[in-house]
Image (tube, rainbow, N blue to C red; front, side, top):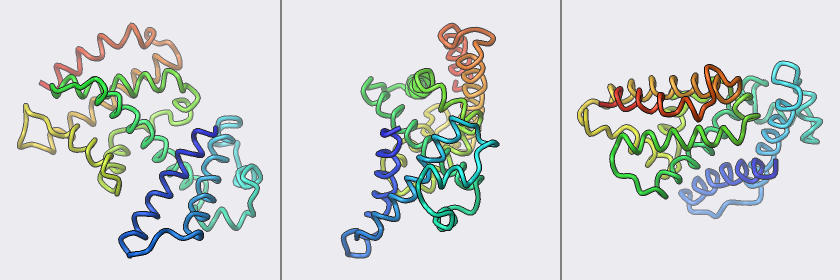
Length: 220
Protein backbone atom coordinates (compact mmCIF):
# COMPACT_ATOMS: atom_id res chain seq x y z
CA UNK A 1 0.00 0.00 0.00
CA UNK A 2 2.90 2.38 0.68
CA UNK A 3 3.83 2.22 -2.99
CA UNK A 4 0.40 3.51 -3.94
CA UNK A 5 0.59 6.41 -1.46
CA UNK A 6 4.01 7.46 -2.72
CA UNK A 7 2.87 7.21 -6.32
CA UNK A 8 -0.30 9.23 -5.79
CA UNK A 9 1.32 11.93 -3.71
CA UNK A 10 4.15 12.32 -6.20
CA UNK A 11 1.67 12.64 -9.08
CA UNK A 12 -0.44 15.29 -7.38
CA UNK A 13 2.61 17.11 -6.04
CA UNK A 14 4.20 17.30 -9.49
CA UNK A 15 1.05 18.83 -10.98
CA UNK A 16 0.86 21.45 -8.23
CA UNK A 17 4.59 22.12 -8.54
CA UNK A 18 4.30 22.75 -12.26
CA UNK A 19 1.36 25.12 -11.80
CA UNK A 20 3.24 27.08 -9.15
CA UNK A 21 6.43 27.18 -11.22
CA UNK A 22 4.53 28.63 -14.16
CA UNK A 23 3.23 31.31 -11.82
CA UNK A 24 6.80 32.11 -10.77
CA UNK A 25 6.62 30.66 -7.24
CA UNK A 26 7.82 27.50 -5.59
CA UNK A 27 5.06 25.18 -4.37
CA UNK A 28 3.93 26.14 -0.90
CA UNK A 29 3.21 23.99 2.08
CA UNK A 30 -0.53 24.46 1.62
CA UNK A 31 -0.51 22.94 -1.88
CA UNK A 32 1.58 20.00 -0.71
CA UNK A 33 -0.80 19.38 2.20
CA UNK A 34 -3.80 19.46 -0.14
CA UNK A 35 -2.13 16.97 -2.46
CA UNK A 36 -1.30 14.76 0.50
CA UNK A 37 -4.89 14.78 1.78
CA UNK A 38 -6.26 13.85 -1.63
CA UNK A 39 -3.71 11.08 -2.03
CA UNK A 40 -4.55 9.84 1.47
CA UNK A 41 -8.25 9.63 0.57
CA UNK A 42 -7.44 7.72 -2.61
CA UNK A 43 -5.22 5.33 -0.69
CA UNK A 44 -7.91 4.79 1.94
CA UNK A 45 -10.53 4.14 -0.74
CA UNK A 46 -8.19 1.75 -2.58
CA UNK A 47 -7.71 -0.27 0.62
CA UNK A 48 -11.43 -0.29 1.46
CA UNK A 49 -12.43 -1.26 -2.08
CA UNK A 50 -10.02 -4.21 -2.04
CA UNK A 51 -11.23 -5.37 1.37
CA UNK A 52 -14.98 -4.82 1.07
CA UNK A 53 -15.69 -4.20 -2.60
CA UNK A 54 -16.78 -0.95 -4.18
CA UNK A 55 -20.51 -1.30 -3.57
CA UNK A 56 -20.15 -2.29 0.10
CA UNK A 57 -17.70 0.52 0.87
CA UNK A 58 -19.30 3.72 2.15
CA UNK A 59 -17.87 7.22 2.28
CA UNK A 60 -17.90 6.84 6.07
CA UNK A 61 -15.60 3.80 5.66
CA UNK A 62 -13.22 5.81 3.49
CA UNK A 63 -12.96 8.86 5.77
CA UNK A 64 -12.57 6.61 8.81
CA UNK A 65 -9.70 4.78 7.12
CA UNK A 66 -8.15 8.10 6.05
CA UNK A 67 -8.71 9.54 9.54
CA UNK A 68 -10.30 12.75 8.24
CA UNK A 69 -13.63 14.47 8.73
CA UNK A 70 -16.40 13.63 6.28
CA UNK A 71 -16.47 17.24 5.10
CA UNK A 72 -12.87 16.87 3.94
CA UNK A 73 -13.96 14.17 1.50
CA UNK A 74 -16.31 16.59 -0.28
CA UNK A 75 -13.55 19.16 -0.69
CA UNK A 76 -11.93 16.80 -3.17
CA UNK A 77 -14.66 14.51 -4.52
CA UNK A 78 -18.31 14.95 -5.41
CA UNK A 79 -19.19 11.40 -4.39
CA UNK A 80 -17.82 7.87 -4.26
CA UNK A 81 -18.20 7.46 -8.01
CA UNK A 82 -16.04 10.49 -8.75
CA UNK A 83 -13.40 9.19 -6.34
CA UNK A 84 -13.43 5.81 -8.08
CA UNK A 85 -13.01 7.52 -11.46
CA UNK A 86 -9.98 9.40 -10.13
CA UNK A 87 -8.60 6.21 -8.61
CA UNK A 88 -8.87 4.43 -11.98
CA UNK A 89 -7.05 7.32 -13.63
CA UNK A 90 -4.21 7.34 -11.11
CA UNK A 91 -3.74 3.57 -11.26
CA UNK A 92 -3.89 3.69 -15.06
CA UNK A 93 -1.17 6.34 -15.14
CA UNK A 94 1.05 4.16 -13.02
CA UNK A 95 0.48 1.17 -15.31
CA UNK A 96 1.10 3.29 -18.42
CA UNK A 97 4.40 4.58 -17.08
CA UNK A 98 5.45 1.09 -16.04
CA UNK A 99 4.65 -0.35 -19.48
CA UNK A 100 6.34 2.48 -21.39
CA UNK A 101 9.49 2.11 -19.30
CA UNK A 102 9.58 -1.60 -20.14
CA UNK A 103 9.30 -0.78 -23.86
CA UNK A 104 12.17 1.70 -23.64
CA UNK A 105 14.32 -0.82 -21.77
CA UNK A 106 13.83 -3.30 -24.62
CA UNK A 107 14.82 -0.62 -27.16
CA UNK A 108 12.05 -1.67 -29.55
CA UNK A 109 11.90 0.26 -32.83
CA UNK A 110 9.27 -1.42 -35.01
CA UNK A 111 5.78 -0.04 -34.38
CA UNK A 112 4.00 -3.39 -34.03
CA UNK A 113 6.67 -4.62 -31.62
CA UNK A 114 6.30 -1.43 -29.57
CA UNK A 115 2.52 -1.82 -29.26
CA UNK A 116 2.75 -5.52 -28.39
CA UNK A 117 5.63 -4.86 -26.00
CA UNK A 118 3.59 -2.16 -24.32
CA UNK A 119 0.51 -4.39 -23.98
CA UNK A 120 2.61 -7.31 -22.78
CA UNK A 121 4.03 -5.13 -20.00
CA UNK A 122 0.48 -4.14 -19.00
CA UNK A 123 -0.59 -7.79 -18.92
CA UNK A 124 2.47 -8.79 -16.89
CA UNK A 125 1.77 -5.96 -14.46
CA UNK A 126 -1.76 -7.18 -13.85
CA UNK A 127 -0.56 -10.78 -13.52
CA UNK A 128 1.30 -9.70 -10.40
CA UNK A 129 -1.39 -7.23 -9.26
CA UNK A 130 -4.54 -9.31 -9.60
CA UNK A 131 -6.38 -7.46 -6.86
CA UNK A 132 -5.92 -4.20 -8.75
CA UNK A 133 -7.15 -5.82 -11.96
CA UNK A 134 -10.24 -7.13 -10.16
CA UNK A 135 -10.89 -3.65 -8.81
CA UNK A 136 -10.53 -1.96 -12.19
CA UNK A 137 -12.35 -4.72 -14.07
CA UNK A 138 -13.00 -3.19 -17.51
CA UNK A 139 -12.22 0.39 -16.47
CA UNK A 140 -8.68 0.12 -17.88
CA UNK A 141 -9.82 0.98 -21.40
CA UNK A 142 -8.47 3.00 -24.31
CA UNK A 143 -10.97 5.89 -23.86
CA UNK A 144 -9.73 6.26 -20.27
CA UNK A 145 -6.12 5.98 -21.42
CA UNK A 146 -6.68 8.50 -24.22
CA UNK A 147 -8.36 10.91 -21.80
CA UNK A 148 -5.36 10.63 -19.48
CA UNK A 149 -2.84 11.20 -22.24
CA UNK A 150 -4.68 14.11 -23.83
CA UNK A 151 -5.25 16.06 -20.63
CA UNK A 152 -2.07 15.16 -18.78
CA UNK A 153 0.46 17.90 -18.14
CA UNK A 154 3.20 15.30 -17.80
CA UNK A 155 5.53 15.10 -20.80
CA UNK A 156 6.19 11.40 -20.34
CA UNK A 157 2.50 10.59 -20.75
CA UNK A 158 2.35 12.77 -23.86
CA UNK A 159 5.29 10.79 -25.24
CA UNK A 160 3.35 7.57 -24.68
CA UNK A 161 0.38 8.94 -26.63
CA UNK A 162 2.52 10.04 -29.57
CA UNK A 163 4.34 6.72 -29.67
CA UNK A 164 1.19 4.59 -29.65
CA UNK A 165 -0.69 6.68 -32.22
CA UNK A 166 2.22 7.06 -34.64
CA UNK A 167 1.23 4.15 -36.88
CA UNK A 168 3.62 4.05 -39.90
CA UNK A 169 1.17 1.88 -41.84
CA UNK A 170 -1.42 4.69 -41.70
CA UNK A 171 0.66 7.84 -41.10
CA UNK A 172 -2.04 10.33 -42.09
CA UNK A 173 -4.91 8.70 -40.21
CA UNK A 174 -4.73 9.35 -36.47
CA UNK A 175 -8.44 8.65 -36.11
CA UNK A 176 -7.96 5.21 -37.62
CA UNK A 177 -4.96 4.61 -35.33
CA UNK A 178 -7.21 5.52 -32.41
CA UNK A 179 -9.85 3.04 -33.60
CA UNK A 180 -7.23 0.29 -33.92
CA UNK A 181 -5.91 0.94 -30.41
CA UNK A 182 -9.43 1.14 -29.01
CA UNK A 183 -10.14 -2.32 -30.42
CA UNK A 184 -6.79 -3.75 -29.35
CA UNK A 185 -6.99 -2.49 -25.77
CA UNK A 186 -10.60 -3.70 -25.49
CA UNK A 187 -9.53 -7.11 -26.81
CA UNK A 188 -6.56 -7.34 -24.43
CA UNK A 189 -8.68 -6.11 -21.54
CA UNK A 190 -11.36 -8.71 -22.08
CA UNK A 191 -9.01 -11.62 -22.76
CA UNK A 192 -6.59 -10.52 -20.06
CA UNK A 193 -9.24 -10.23 -17.36
CA UNK A 194 -10.84 -13.59 -18.19
CA UNK A 195 -7.50 -15.39 -18.46
CA UNK A 196 -5.77 -13.83 -15.46
CA UNK A 197 -8.71 -13.84 -13.04
CA UNK A 198 -10.72 -16.86 -14.20
CA UNK A 199 -8.23 -18.86 -16.24
CA UNK A 200 -10.73 -18.85 -19.13
CA UNK A 201 -10.53 -19.98 -21.86
CA UNK A 202 -6.94 -20.76 -20.79
CA UNK A 203 -4.12 -19.20 -18.79
CA UNK A 204 -2.91 -15.83 -20.00
CA UNK A 205 0.51 -17.28 -20.89
CA UNK A 206 -1.18 -19.71 -23.27
CA UNK A 207 -3.45 -17.00 -24.66
CA UNK A 208 -0.76 -14.40 -25.32
CA UNK A 209 0.64 -15.94 -28.55
CA UNK A 210 -2.88 -16.07 -30.02
CA UNK A 211 -3.64 -12.57 -28.81
CA UNK A 212 -0.45 -11.07 -30.21
CA UNK A 213 -0.94 -12.77 -33.58
CA UNK A 214 -4.36 -11.14 -33.81
CA UNK A 215 -2.91 -7.76 -32.87
CA UNK A 216 -0.26 -7.97 -35.59
CA UNK A 217 -2.99 -8.66 -38.15
CA UNK A 218 -5.06 -5.72 -36.91
CA UNK A 219 -2.17 -3.27 -37.04
CA UNK A 220 -1.10 -4.23 -40.55
